[in-house]
Length: 270
Image 1 (tube, rainbow, N blue to C red):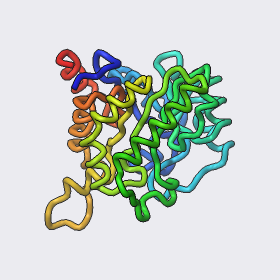
Image 2 (cartoon, rainbow, N blue to C red):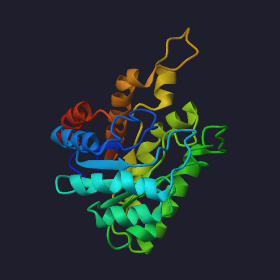
Image 3 (cartoon, rainbow, N blue to C red):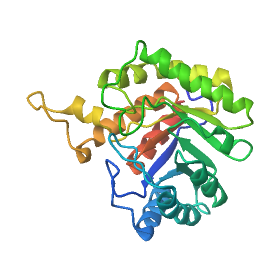
Image 4 (spheres, rainbow, N blue to C red):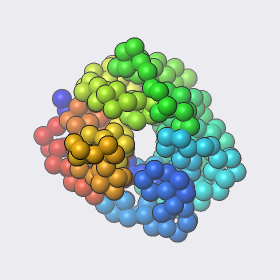
């Protein structure tokens, strides 16, 4: 299935301006380091840079509005002249300030900020069961595909009716899901792509990069521990390609250069 919205999938580079994100926490907390890494991802071909100032890893505690604003806004201001910038936040004040600083997309794991985006920015409705602090304690669904897809599509319709002109949906891989839940959602992605297009959405966003389920799947049979974060590149790239082939409009990744190359290889055949 080809991508219905883009000639080839867009690569969204992850830029966590945090001390505690699961993969790159602490690496880009310094302003200059964050901006330099953002520009590096632009050079590598990222079409969007997703800037976040509050970790959403399993078990993460929230930070104050003031702290998040201080982390995010200077980075958004520095990067927005060079690339499309998304702000990864659940706080209305942070989203509003980031849009004022040049961001044009709100990546929202709470799926609650469509009114902030209405009339001025794109909005990503992400599915999450629970909160980052609790989401991986005991995820449960009667029908994960129906429940997750139904939720994000419902939020998308609400947002479109409220005046958000560019709405994306994201099934929230790893946000309150078991390994089997994640695999089922990936397997059924073509269904979400088709349903999102029928609902008037701009496309589907998928983020699997370096997530724990990839480490579980790739761990040696004799090991009870998942592969470390730094050893999940192959699974990250493979699942990004799965998402592209399923028709995802955007893949959210840490490893931009390799994913961009894959997107370019895929694009001409789409």
